[in-house]
Length: 197
Image 1 (cartoon, rainbow, N blue to C red):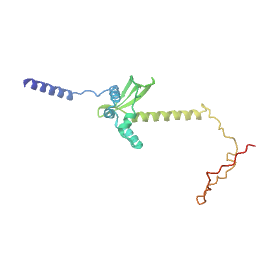
Image 2: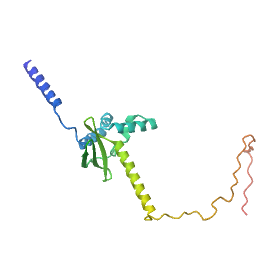
Image 3: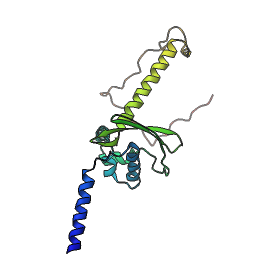
Image 4: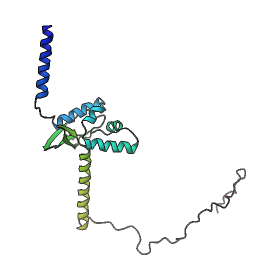
């Protein structure tokens, strides 16, 4: 009985010390590593726990639009290719409650993953990634527009002929009258042979 009490007190003390410690939350890279483990083991619940509230809302909206469950969207739209075996991370940057980490993709290139700290835990921010992509595209479009306006990029001439661009025959095609009977075709008759003159 004395051994049992000693073990019980030791475990209680260990639990009290562990719960009372002020450990820093997992790093963004540790969050990504946990996500890869959950993805490989198809642990959808853990994958959802590692996604930000904005990401879950984004996935829920898509699930509703497609008529599928949130779990199906989370499983289909992972950060990594399903057959990817090696996961490399670099350039972790933390700015307050936001972070980015570069992740090597299946093609050998590097993708930037955005994370946010929610409730003291780093979570993957798919919404932040989407917002950044939209922002980058808008910047590229603005730059392209500016280059076109400055004449740095020539605009091709239109292939349409000069002058009157209206069709020669603007008469609308006849619309069948639903009140007139449709001519019947006798399937037993043979059409006349075509002449090739």
